Every structure is written in structure tokens, then in C-alpha cells.
Length: 438
Ligand code: XUL
Ligand code: CO
Image (cartoon, rainbow, N blue to C red; front, side, top):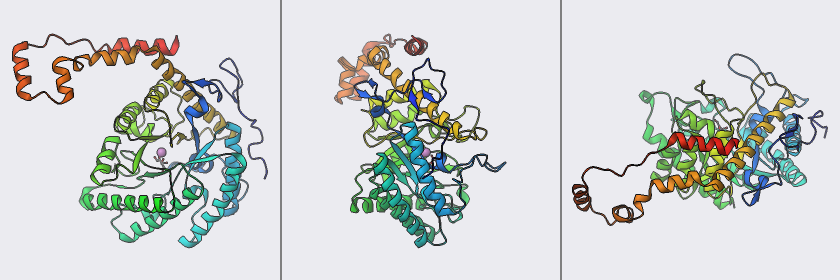
């Protein structure tokens, strides 16, 4: 197959002093940080949809980037796209990738034909994965792009749509399993509502849970051993997405008895759309033993939508990797760049520069997080802040032996509280700066 990215060499680590734009400044795959190589700690993945398919189209204009791969024939294009994807991953040294069913093979006139197309591409992907030593981080089904999903898929008011979505998810699970995928993602594309005036919210959510249960049971029955993830997002495309944020998703999973079957796939830009920090969403997942995987990107503080920018903010990636390390690192999950170049960054080189920026920023984040933990000041501060729960009345509260009557007697005896200590936020923020900048 032809080389698609002819002017792009294999990207190598050259260190922070290098002025070669097509080199890593901080991501040194074999460097050991915190007992594991950077490659093992970061587990980067390429998103097929943004990287191989999206051409910069927006509601004000057509695409700016050429993603035709030299042909207009849909299946020839899908095949050439697959070769290009593996060339790109090889040149960047990325081991994993993620796809929606429709990213790898375009929809045909009937579901049968569409599935036959998927079978064909599955064989090619399998071959390319073996030849190039690549792995599938996760697969998913695009149950939001086609007009049939205008009112949702699993939450559609129309049972025929529900059935179609179920069929599509069944096939996506088969493809993911056949390719040895480490995960399968549910992101609620249009699973939400525009107005409650036309919505039976309870039936819609009950149905979503039914679909997820069917998917888990079927996946396990065909030998899918990977993790099932749900990816929270508060809005866009619907006004109100049901999988709003980590806490909402956890409540949903528990209500329907799905909490043992699902972990969370946390996306940075979705966190900020929900008015949370990325770290907050990761912490909620970690505290509930539900941390799974990450969609790595960033939003823009001035824009209220999912801009899916490549992550370039080292402060955020540091706090992210701090949570990942504290969660014990990635197991089935990894860092999927659910990110796209800006519409004006339309050249092939821009895509590589964007990945280099994202990978370097996560390498910096990993290094800083490792230093935060080795430095110990922040962890010690938090530990000391809650010291009153380690003895006396505090220990009784934590042990669950204190009664409300006993606490009243304690408070009456104590007089007013005299033991508060400062939260020292400004000091801790300056500690972060000293760790980051020396
Ligand atoms: C959309 C989004 C999706 C999911 C997979 O905001 O993040 O690409 O990651 O469907
Ligand atoms: Co995502």
C-alpha cells in the first residue's frame, strides 16, 4: 500500500532542547517513571473518528482537510483509511486505537450489507494489527449519526429504533471481541431529551438499562473479556444527556444493578461541560472503584461546547495523572485522544504536531504527578487535615460507634470549636508551581 504521510518521518524523542517540531520533547517511551515505562503508564490510543475521518466540517462551512485517501469508492476508501491509520500509529509510536463501527466501514443501504462491510474490514484490521503489533483499546457503535436516531437510540420513543440500535451494538460487540478489544464504550450519543413536554424520562432510562444489560450478557456469552465503559457527558447533542456526569452515571448503574459490569470512561471536555474539573470526575470514579479509561482532550474556557481540543495544559494533565496513579494506573483502559485539530490546522503535518503536543503534555503530566507524590507535601497536608478522625471522638465517628447523643454530650462539654486549621489553598497552589517549575 502507498505511503500516505510521505513527508512525516517516524517521530522520535529528542528532548526539550530540540527545535525539531516533528520530535517528542518530553515523551520518551522507554524512560521509567514511577516504576514503569512512560509507554506502559500512558497507554496512548488514536481515535479513528477524529484522526482518520473528520475533515473539519462545521455548521458554517465544508471540510478543510482531505480525508478521501485518494478515492471516492466507499469500501476502497475504508480500506485505504485503515492502512493510513496504522501508518500514522507507527510513525507516532502509538500502540492502541479506538473506533465506532461507522468509522471503520461506512453504512450501506441495508443492515445486512453494512454488517458484511464490517466483516470485510474486520479481517483487514486483524491483519494490520498483527503485522504492526497494535491493540484495540475499545470499540463502540455510532448510534447517533444516522437520521433514524433523531430521538435517541436506546432511549428512543420508537421500539423499532431501539431494535435497530440493539442490532448495531450486537455487531459492534462481535467486531470488538474478534479484534481482542480491551473495552467497549457506551457514550449516550442522543440518549437524552430536548423537552420534558414530549418525554417519558422513566421509560427511556429503564430502556437504556435494558439495552445495556442485553449488551453485557451477549458480550460475555461470545467471550468478550474486556471492560464495559460508560462515558459521561452533560449536554450536546441533546440539551440534557442522561449520562450527565460521573455521579449521575454511578447512580444510574446502581439503580439498575449494572454497577458491577461497568467502569467509567472519563473525558476532560465532558467534565468541564458539566461544570466540573477533569480531576473531579476522575476522583469521583476513583473513589467509587469505577475508574476505567480516559478520553484525553481539553475544552476552551470561553466556549460552552465540546471543542475536543488536543490537551496542551500540563497543569490539567498533571492532576489527571495524579488521579490515575492513585487509582493504581491503567489496567484495561488508556489515554484515547478524543481530540481533533482546529479547522484551520488542515495539513497532514498538523495532525502529527497535534498528537506530539498531546503526548508530550501527558508525558509532562506524568512526570509532574510522579514528583507530586515523591514530594509528599500535598498528600501529607491532606492527611494532616483530617487527623482529628484518627483518635478520640473522630475515630469513633469513622468507626461508626459514635451516637448522636454522645456527640451532643461532647459538643456541650467542648464549648465552641477552637481547633479549626487553615485550608492553605494558596500555599498548596504555590507548592504545585514549585513542583512544576523547580
Ligand atoms: C462525543 C464523544 C464520543 C465518544 C465515543 O462527545 O466523546 O466520541 O467518545 O462515542
Ligand atoms: Co469521548
